[in-house]
Length: 272
Image (tube, rainbow, N blue to C red; front, side, top):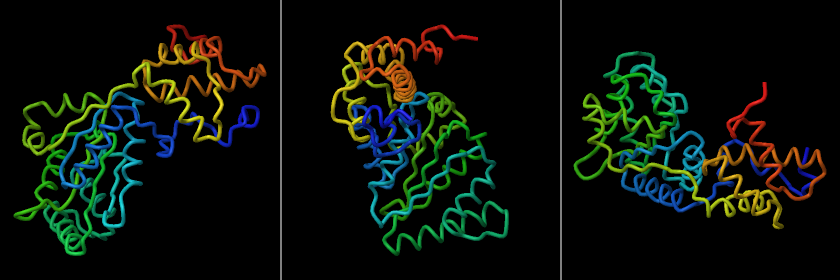
């Protein structure tokens, strides 16, 4: 709609977790490094962050960076009972399991993991939205997956990705056995104010625009209303571009960001 008006090849502020748009702020760069280290070491890592902080985009970028010696298994809806969870893992491995006994499922998954090890392949299991895991029993199955190891090496990597309350939940004594297996922790915070300009310009550049489009005042307002959360920045910027297109404004100024914030209810006011 507004792409041609602003000389864009694609929409720069989509909400989809497209890894090519990933902006490596200091925090995102550190998170990426820890994820890659956990995968190399075949360890269990917990990545938490606020809603919209870029966790899913980050894991997609990590997946894209892996070579052929890795088997990536991703679970995006972990609201599963223990047997459902294990059956889902088995299916992602390409295992056709006709039974529902947990012990049999674990044994079959282990056999597949060991065959991968002999073939030089490392499974990487990513559990997104892990705060949705329903109870202790499913967390226990995750812990049992960390038992897939030999004397000198683990056989797979596990990445738990979730919102902030996931870490608080795992601090409870009932989850102590799993927490003790977690080798790395990282909390992905929002962008700093001095990173907003780089973030916006990066996404515009990926969409084909090198020239400045947002004024300094608009960038300041983007940070003020979003708190540095990438998803909120995207929502504000996309709304401002649409409004600017309607008004035939070639540059996005702070008035357009203010209007976008009102429309999105991010300034404490929402129209009925």
